[in-house]
Amino acid sequence: MHQAHSGQPVRDIPGTGQRFGTTSGNANWFVTGVDSNSGTFSAESGDIGNSQATRLEVALETGAGDIEFARYVLKSPEPNSTEFCADTRYPVIDLLPEQKKVRSKGGTMRLGVYPCQLAPGSQAANAYQEELVYERHRHRYEFNNEFRTPLEKAGLVYSGLSPDGNLVEICELAGHPWMVSCQFHPEFNSRPHRPHPLFRDFIGAAMKTLREGAQPSLPLNS
Image (cartoon, rainbow, N blue to C red; front, side, top):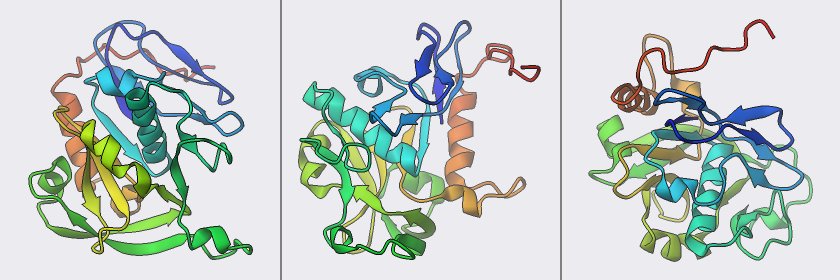
């Protein structure tokens, strides 16, 4: 989910029936969408590198954001996930080596609670106010470590890693007002009166730029 600023055109998300962007005002909301057939994303290549919109990406959205940033950095539409395009030249999101050997898929995803080591001074660490946190996962595909160095040089910050440093759990953009993407599902640990730290800080950052009345009306009657 993201906060989009005025000036961005409303665009259809291929294969989803969803739209994203703004028509007027200075801010409103959209959710990253993925067309599983073509591997296309809601944001055109380059948006993530130039936009200062407040962003929180969760689970599949995290992979979509990483691919979007890779397309921006490499100036190519080819970076993708092997979940959407098995023969992509740039598999930014891919199966772990041990997962590639799995034939029977039942019960073999990364499921349950896993530890995550946070980078001091990062937006994630500031939200949690802790160095080590535990979050719930449900996924099979991971960030491909072969792309860590080039994307880090371009400004991607790996603010949350597995304790052994092998798995990227949280990403941020250096110098961005507030942009966090997490591989896990923070909604599993969020309640109306006890919001998850990432949701709390995402809303808090968005409130600084969101103008009341700027959002288009919800299509409640359609």
